[in-house]
Image: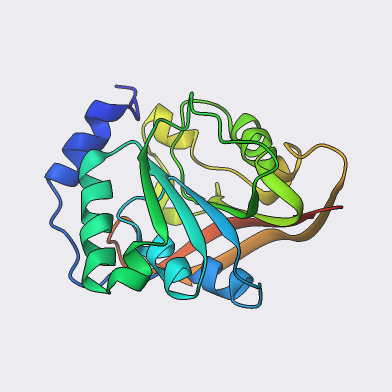
Length: 209
C-alpha cells in the first residue's frame, strides 16, 4: 500500500520510537556549514532538532520547522538542557512543508535533510531556495536512488529518493552550485537507525547578490 507522509504517519513514527539520549547533527551539515559565519538559519524538516541545536550552539538564530509535534517537543527539551543561550536562539514551528511557505529572501542558511514530502523535490527545492537571502546558502540532502537501504520501499518512500542533479534543477537563475553529487556516510547513527553505509544526494548552492 502507498505510504502517505502526513501528520498521522509522523505521529506514529515518533510515538513508536524512543527519544535518543544523544543527538548528533547530520554529517553533511557539519561538513558544509562549519566554515560559514553565523546568521539566520532555517532548518526545514528539523525532526528532533539535532541540526537546529548544533547551529544554535554555534551562534546561529534558527527557525526549526517540522510537522511532528513529538519531534519538536524532543528538540525543545534537548535545546533546553544545553542552556538558555542555545534554547533562546531557536524558534520551533509546527508546519507541513508540503503547504508551508517560508518568508522570502530571509535566511543566510536554509538546510533540509532527508525530507519526505508529498510534493516533488524540485518543487520543494524551489520553495526553500526562495527563502535564502542574497549571498546566503542552500543545503539540501536526500536519499540517493542507489542507496541500498531504500530499495524496494513503498511508493511514497520512493519519492524521497533523489539525485543532486534533480535537486539543482529546482533552482532558478542567480545561483552558484558549489556541491552537487553523491556522498556516502555511516548509517549506524542515521535517521532510520540502520547500520552499514548510506548514499546521499547533496546539493549546496550560494545565492548571488
